[in-house]
Length: 403
Image 1 (cartoon, one colour):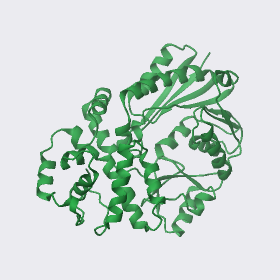
Image 2 (image 1 turned 30 degrees about the horizontal axis):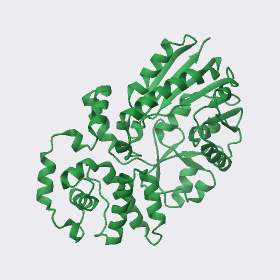
Image 3 (image 1 turned 45 degrees about the horizontal axis):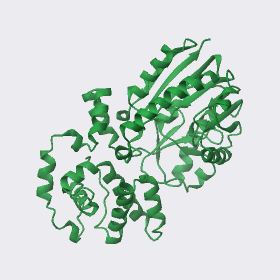
Image 4 (image 1 turned 135 degrees about the horizontal axis):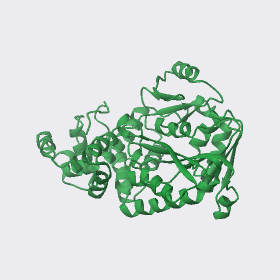
C-alpha cells in the first residue's frame, strides 16, 4: 500500500458504520463500488464535504487493498476488523471502538513486513495475478499491478465547441479549481486536487467532460476530419463520440451506435449539453442494423467490450468481480464485433479497434487473428497506453480497408 493518507481527526462511529455498511454491500451483494458509495452519500445528506471524502476515499482504498487488509486482520469479510487494520496501516489515528481494540500496531507492521507473496502484498486474486503474469511477464505485470493500485487522476477534456483549454483553465481557477496541462494531450487538463465537478456550473454549461487522458487518445488516433462520415459502433455513454464531434468541428456526421438504449438516451442529453450537433444515435437491433451500413464509414471506431484490466485504478472492485469465464466470453464477443462490424468501413477508409484492457490476448492478438482471416484489411499502426504512465490503460490499433 502506498503512503497516501486522508488527514482527519478520529472519525465518529456514524462515519465508520457508513464505511462498513458500504463495504458489506459491495462485497456481499456484489454491487458496483461507485454506485454503492453514491447511494451511501445520498442517504446521509448531513455529512459535510470532509466526511463525504473520508467515506468515499476510505471505502475505495479498502476495496483496492482488500486481500492485504483481510490477511493482516485475519478476519476475511469482517469489515470492522479490516477497517481497524486499515487505520493502522495508513498510520491514521485509530478510533476508540471496541472492534479495533485487539489490533496492535507492532503486530500489524511485523506481519506486513514479513509478506513475501506479491499477490497478497498488491491485493489481487490468484487467478488474475497468474493470467496477467503469463500475458505480460512477471516484471512488466508487477510494475502495472502497482500502478493500478494508485488512485486514478481526474482529467478533464475541454469541449472545443464552447471553449479553449487556456480559457477553461482560467475560468476554473476563478472558482479555486487548479488544473495542469498534460504533455501530448491537446484537449486535456488534470485536476491538481481531486474533487467532484459534476455539479460545477461550467460542467453543466458543457464546457468540459470528465474523460481520462488515455481515453482521449483513442479519438485522436482515429484521425477524423471535418465533413467525414464516422461510425462509433460501441458508443456506450458517448464520451468518444463527443470528442470526435469536437475534433470534426460539428461538420459531417457521427452515427453513435450501441445495443443498450438507455446509454444512447444518456448520450443524447450529453450531446445537447455539449452542442455536439452532428451526432445521430442508432440502436443496434440485430445484424440488419449493421448490414444497412456496410461500406459507408470513412472512419469506424470499435471501442469493444473488454475485461477492463486497464481501468482498475478507476474501478478497483473489478479485481474481485472479474473471472476467467467472463474474460473468455468477452474475447469471443470481441472477435465477433471486429469481424462483423468492420465491413461498415468504406474501401480506403480506416477503423480503430480499441479496448481498456492491458491483456495482449484482448488487444494485438485479436488484431493479428482478424488480419490473418481478412485480406480486405491491413495493419497501419497500434499504440498501448499503460497504467504505469500515469493514467488508465488502453490499447488502440489503426486498420485500413483495402478491398
